[in-house]
Image: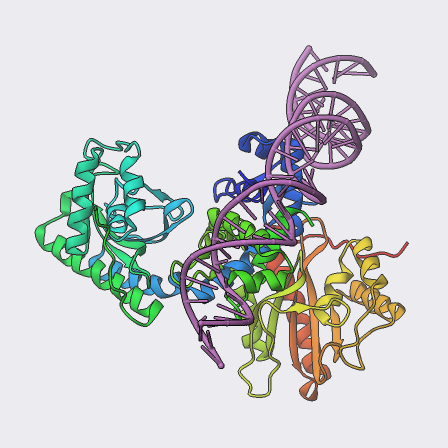
Length: 257
Length: 257
DNA sequence: GCGATCGGTTCATTATTTGAACCGATAGTT
DNA sequence: AACTATCGGTTCAAATAATGAACCGATCGC
């Protein structure tokens, strides 16, 4: 792990649940020496990515991140473009709709519009979605470079429920089906009682950059609602891609040669 | 410059105007060797702070920044808290109101609500504000640690207009006056024809973390508008601090021993 | 076809990072 | 009041990582 990667990895300890850390505790968590950790934090602080409280001496994420995030969003306005579209889907379906984006850490939920119904599926922004166990993950894999799919298939596939696809052949079949039909279905693969459909959002290179999914309690799923939701996520993902890139990217499906 | 600082400094080349860079051009700009630059960018990319286009091979800021920015804003919701307050001030005064925050790079404009009048002062978010030449800067210095003020006074003070306070004694007097009255006035110090008043936003340690300012064309400034604007920025800065910290911090003025 | 520049790679050399041991300060316990 | 544990912080010989000149194939413009 390079020095830069070590430093950035410290940033990843800061979460909504744990937004502040003392030096010793973050060193312990990161399994870095205290001196090393402090030097890395001081370097991050000098660039504004981290701030140290003058009174408590504890560290938090810094204001410099806001400018960089603004530049990123300004140039690649995924949230700005996608949020209104997802909100529309949530309104028309009255189910939970969520957007996820693929990055260094994996497929991460970046925005959620929850259903207004009391019996609803709750998803947390920031949550990492296992590729093999979720509709979003399979939709994403359906339009991913073959080596990424192979890498995923080679890994030990965690069983979250007894419905999780843990056999590579089964997962591969689901990915192939999703590639052919342009959407995926997730039936209790990540959590019991949850049914989802998802569509991949494509980048200009034809590979998926994320997914949009509708999730609902399995108990109120019908063929009619499923068909409507499939249509909704496909429409939404196309709309998002078209607005981001000015054209609809041609999908590059994962193929298994 | 440490390796971490070198890496982060690359992030700062990405702006709204220049959101994408090729390897050779960013290396040239940063004055780093191409091999070094690539290694730093690859490290940043592996952490999600930067992304490389699969087709053009150019680099842009990465999605990982959005999560970190969200955590930062969630924990320290300066924008979330301040934007509605600033919007109210802009509505009631019908002049340009802007919020700035102090960080590693200096005092930076983070949000602007412009006047609806055709003859208005325009301020850009992201813009660095010279401490000695702006109302925001002087308000900030009025509640800053003495060593920061001394450091500022020791520097060569750039003249942006013929009204800029370039003599340390004059600047010191303006800071002292701002400390005493709780606001500062900026009369064409940064740009001809612009008049501003600003108040510091205090942190729990009593030192300023930023400022809020009203800026208007000098030509329509009267004693009555000035008094109203002073009241407005002071009210706004107190409101922001109270909402952030649950109490009104006691100012720690810069003193000159 | 040629020259310029691109992104990318290599490895001997150079520079930076590391972390064990130490420090004073603070908090909790007895 | 004395003691212990843990805090944030510092130092510098040793260890490790980073550096960048020279090179590569690919692409673009002339």
